[in-house]
Image (cartoon, rainbow, N blue to C red; front, side):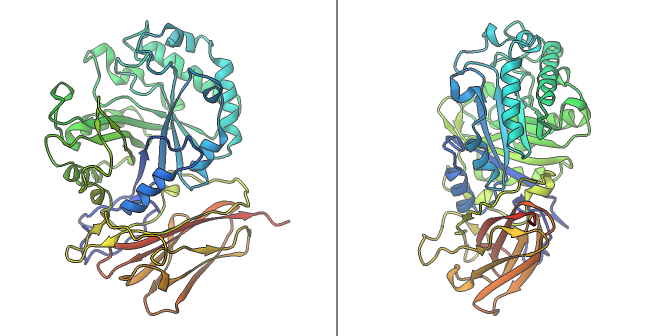
Length: 454
């Protein structure tokens, strides 16, 4: 819970603000949910953002190389569902036939490095280039484990072959002009098998071939002692974070994380995760696995019932776009809106009661914008304050990563904010209403486009 006396800090939209002495460092938050964005939408992600009060900046999903036409090329509507929502696509790109186990000679690292998949990689690269937006790709993740056919200790592979395959893949993608692709190197937090020859450091392709250093890790819970049992966030990630930090100067992400429920409080684990992450100076993003797999665990943000509010701690503040150095330049005249709902402030504790979400209808509200806006002209957002949920003491207005205004209750019923626009492309207004203690009561976002003068 943010202290009532804590001054509000201008942070990036959609980043996590955790309680701390002094100021909190912005860390982007992302999720992987079943189905999204394969249907060409992010309905489940949107619902999680709405119900938790936590902005979701990164959407993660998995795509294999093996399969039919659907996986043989880029599906623009899948990527655009994320991009058009103002979020960052994070694609786990997997050279295997799903379910085939770690022994799949057709997908050996030697074949990848030797050019067997160059036509596929080049075709996919051209599809990514055409999206004209930053795409974060993490191929062959958890390579220091022994459960995927690209692992360095299975399928006739080695760490040296992994480096060759990675560099070859990157070179092919770059040869197609796909400079918008950002490469995410993602080992698992603990080498398995635990041998010097399998250390994650041996797989590192070098700074020229890696834009982000990342790691996957989980608190498996007391029912899986062979996986480490119940472990704190620090025990899960501290050592791996330090090892990654020594590899190079790139930003660090946690690309997969989840916590079991058996053995401790999952809600407390989540709160500790956000707090401990503040001490990791180079950590820029945390991506939660919102899944329920009987063989692995129930990582869902909504389970148990008290967990969702742990994700909603903190002020709903400014945008991930700048923290991730994203500056989309696509000229697009489409405009969509995300209807605001938000969470109710707890009556006594001053924390967000993320389980209470107002129904659509008279308690739902939206922002109104004009789209497109010509470059050099003023963009405007307006909203009817009486349509929003009661309890708002002041309004914070954000535009593309930065707070651009604050209005106190008592202003006219219809509120508005204008800002001159100097950059073409996609932009987003966000308005949040906070109560007297600084907790978010309601929030809404709406996208718009700025286009060149004709």
